[in-house]
Image 1 (cartoon, rainbow, N blue to C red):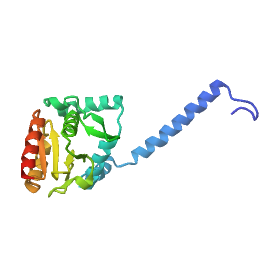
Image 2: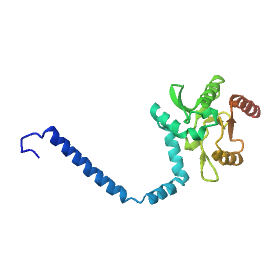
Image 3: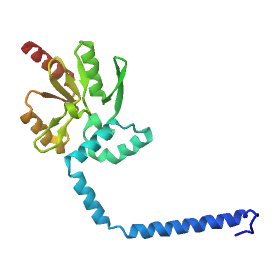
Image 4: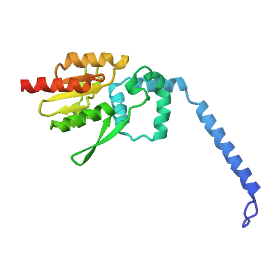
Length: 206
């Protein structure tokens, strides 16, 4: 160290910086070596097996704003999961802002956007429910299903989907079996035609 009242030279400051970095690195390595990684992974796995934990993460992901660079990284990471499914071939779902009655509503993709536009065109009252626990369906396996739209006049939920992942097929079957008639899945590119059929059928009954 330089005498009191004198500033250290550039070379001395660099040596001190390197020494501090080395000490920090040694402490960090010592701390990491004391962690039982398999035990940590097991704890995380147990936590994620709880439906309420998965639900919180799912809602958090739906409402967060992701930068373009992060979305590209996520796209590359998830590309292997989405290959062969054209509607979501980009590897991530694109959140779209839609203005309704002076409010900005986040819609989960182009299918949802087109449904919202169509419902507004025909004057059908709707509410976006893609992250509302109040409007979710609790299934017998303790998971929850979050439909995208609630039609107030018809007391009906609708959810346009480009395709269904194999791992989610069980959830859709449970939804259909346990809440028959409460929620309609609009699957594939003919989702608008399916929506029109559902609205016509429900209106006739009302």
